[in-house]
Length: 334
Image 1 (cartoon, rainbow, N blue to C red):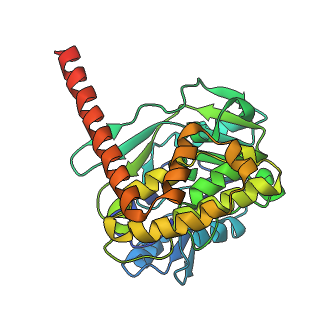
Image 2 (cartoon, rainbow, N blue to C red):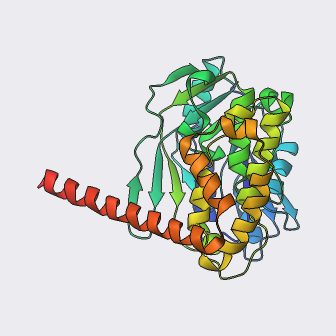
């Protein structure tokens, strides 16, 4: 008999998309599934939808909790599941009918710790757009040392994990924080030895409705706490623990988030960013790239107004260069 796979689905305020998500799991060609639905205190009709689906399929297990966030629900789902393998699915997305079987087959015929599928389709109101593969590898098993963690899509929903691997390293998601997948993937690539690639099916990522960008970056609510800075701090702590600070990713991630942050919050972001940068010693900074040193010096040696003007100039320049590239492509393909 095929191994039991636990599909962990955190659910919050997705009544419009939940049936489509559940249908895609129920109709997988891989049948030995345990479908763990964690209702994270959803205020809409998700609870009723779940109960109706449970009547149709006894593989569905439902847990109703007070709102604890995405990471809490994922951790809870793992702890209340029993499959030999673990798959995560976001409740507003869906997957091809052969998606899980492809991940399972790739993992079973290798000695990898997890399998990965790079095929992503963005779902908009009136069209679906397939993304180019980020990791251009054929199906097979690869040494994790040959792949950088940021060369694969950061979501955990495109991966299948061995439970033994999960348990061995006590992997979990940082609760109470956004960008939890970012930290999780860094830990994943530190502990894993091999990755196995599947090219079967695709993951359908919903980009309609209230976007993360609108609800976080463009919020006109003044903030003093920034998840991306706290995640980066935890990344530093993680690498320091294993004496691998030199492997810490580029400050470009922080730079990109500073640029995206709305003007109302840029001053507070810079204040918190300086606190983080103040903890970096000379030895650590000596290992960073030229861009990172320039960004560090910009933030640490200039006032907020100067920094914001420089960011605006760079953003405008990037938009100009992007426009030039688009024009060049149009001319090339005429």
